[in-house]
Length: 313
Ligand code: AMP
Ligand code: MG
Image (cartoon, rainbow, N blue to C red; front, side, top):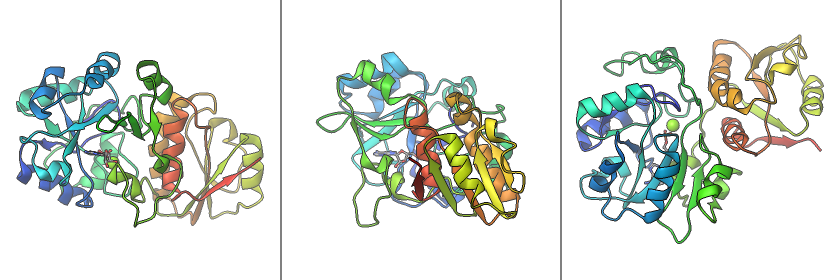
């Protein structure tokens, strides 16, 4: 189903058997829990035995929209959804087709991004077809997704609210409602296999094209020069629109103006995916600073690179 963030692979969140098919279609690791999508706020009371007051404040401010809240899990949610955790992620999407599908189904829908596990998320029906053809029953084509990066995931089960994944709702927006938000270090750095992370999904290589990616952070002009000095005809470059003509010998994919973070969020997965239709053997990427939506865009690019990051001073 289309949502305002990315396309989701949806199944009845109350059926372990249905949910198991999501894991099979994606090849998703069994310890990476799913987000449950609802169509009306009141449905959260049926999924969560004790809804934190903070959840009501956040819902008031950001639902329907690209925010997932981690709350205590009630018995109706099968272990297949939460992967054995005693919490569950809940989101009320704003996309009219997603909400109509949830209402018509009469049940909440568990839905991760509709990509093969490890690949960039899907923001068009064509992306979904590329990954899921033959593995799923149908695609509802709602056109390209408006936000383009996944939901922000915030945990409300600890002493303080904690940002587990940056997304369509920015940290700065969250801070207008929450006095203090802790930020999980997995947002910025690679997490070792032995470390227990709060959002299991954050430890996996994700969003990655087939060719290895190096992120070049810092001033975009200097980043462009750094890349030019290392590029050859087998190099792919993920760059801001302003630098389209700067790498004439390379395969160039642009992901929006350096000044337009919303465009970058909308276009980043399509651009990353496009490299897989080429024969580039390495990819360099420009990257926005960690501000506003830039935090989510930069996180996706760095994850695509397995956190291989060069900081240009
Ligand atoms: P996806 O739906 O593929 O965008 O991934 C959902 C993200 O939410 C993953 O990073 C999960 O690890 C995270 N997530 C889902 N449920 C929980 C939960 N109960 N606790 C912590 N993180 C969760
Ligand atoms: Mg995903």
